[in-house]
Amino acid sequence: MKKILFIIITFFAGVSFVNAQDQPWSQRMAGTAMKLWADTSKAHWTYEQGVVLKGMEEVWLQTGDKKYFKYIQNYMDALVADDGTIKGYKKDDYTLDNVLCGRSVLLLYNVLQKEKYRKALLQIRDQLSNQPRTTDGGFWHKKRYTSQMWLDGLYMAEPFYAEYASTFKEDTDFNDIARQLILIDKHARDAKSGLYYHGWDESKSEKWANPQTGLSQNIWGRADGWYAMALVDVLDKFPANNPHRVELLAILNRFAAAIQKYQDPKLGLWYQIMDKQQTTGNYPEASASCMFVYALAKGAREGYLPASYLAVAKKGYEGILAKFITTNADGKVNLNGTVSVGGLGGKPYRDGSYQYYLSEKVVQNDPKGIGAFIQASVEMERLAHINEGAGKTVMLDSYFNDEHRHNGLGKMVSYHYKWDEMDNDGFSMFGHIFDNYGVRKETLFTAPTAQNLSKSNIYIIVDPDIPKENPNTKYIKDDHIKAISEWVHAGGVLLILNNDTGNAEFKHLNNLIAKFGIQYNEDSRNHVQGYQFEQGAIYIPAGNEIFKTARKVYIKDISTLTVTPPAYSALTDKNDVIVAVAKYGKGAVFAVGDPWFYNEYTDGRKLPYDFQNFEAANDLVKWAIDQTKNNRSK
Image 1: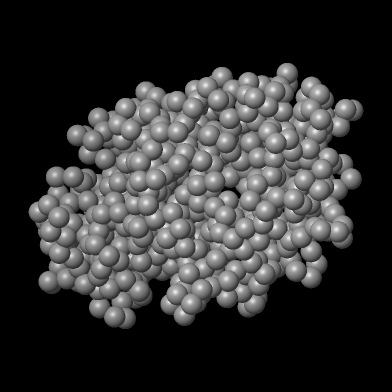
Image 2: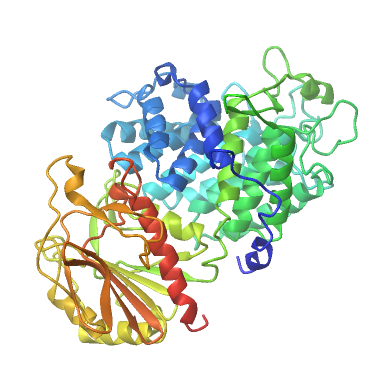
């Protein structure tokens, strides 16, 4: 992340992300997908559509536009019945291809918390518990492909496995997840090129397998693309304290160097058979190129790879736009150049020869290619503001707000306004915005002190507990006030998102913010009846110092504020102070009487389109980052 500064300056100079309607390529291609597969009642449980749905998820997170989430929900609801059974899913086939769509079920469960999704997830997870394995523990790609591991299977299964383990706090599963990725590196890696053969047969008995090594004959681009995507997606959820994380990072970095080596120096693309660019009949292939752009851009953005790989990703993305993207007269976007399929064995038999891979059809708008292109586009678009908060850290309090509940497997977990919560009360969308600005997220589970606050630039206190929420209520005390106020004075940025009377702790929180000239009034306004959202509308005048883009926002059941210098009103409505700001020493304080930026009102699913809470959250993040310019060096 540290070196991204030097690359982002010129990063976007040669890449155009928008069309005449000023839409990024990810949204334009998502629009194509929703037209191509418009009738979700005809949904199929296939890995091809799983790649598309994952792309839709990324666009939703990037835009806060409900139509992308609703598309995923409608698609999955055509397949997942109320009792959790899945149309078209056959667990006993034990094919890893059938696992990938589970990621969309996980998304729906995490957001909606519906029991039918949990039941469906348990079936898919049970498949992995009983999936046939090689003697050293690697998943067979399919039950009927005895003793075989394919690179494809790593993407089909491991990201789901990691997301499931993270969701349900099954931390020991990460050892098995790492084993799968490490075993394919052990068995399928070509030492000469650093790339990976498509498949490995432990028995060495298949006709496509080398009788000495068990490896298939060729290095197929999309297979390597599946593996690259699997690595970066698994690392997103992989615990920092698990020793296998270091191994996975080493594999990714070694693989990235090989991917860069085999990038066409002129076109920026990657070939159907990666290490035989000059061989007759070989060609640049779209889906593999999209997958490598995604993996390299995400790897660099997340800090898994050196920032120098952003240039490799940029060159690849420019090549994709130049060679594979076309637009119809009606504005529909097309992705050309994706090979329709690639496999080993089966009927008719696929021998894994060079001639076989070149014989498969190359098609337009293949779902695997479209899904990979959407994901690659989102990753490239996420780099637009990544430098603005680079090197900064935002710390979310989980000491004063410390509620717990049982999760879907009966384990006690922390919840309510947490970074990783995707349901209505979570802060996952708010956290995604911080990610887009390059700000590192942390959570503070202990009381604030001078020492632990010194590790952050932005500190968020949201809705401190009251006894009815948490019997073990922890109040803000004098030593906390001293530590927090001195940290702000030295350059920290404090964001306080409280609540209204009856749902909030006022006395001790007011003792803290009195240091800055702010007091919460023990009141409640903007009551909303049912879906009469206009009752919660607040209009923001042009020129507001914080909210540069949002003009109409929704905020209900809010406590108002009283301000005295150095504090002042940053947003007033009907003579009430809604948002207060104080400049205190080198730092700044922001206060509002509602948690406000939780998912229910930022992820777009509930509010009418004319409300701009998602934009307001972006505005606040940018403002908070701007206030850190006087912060002491970290």
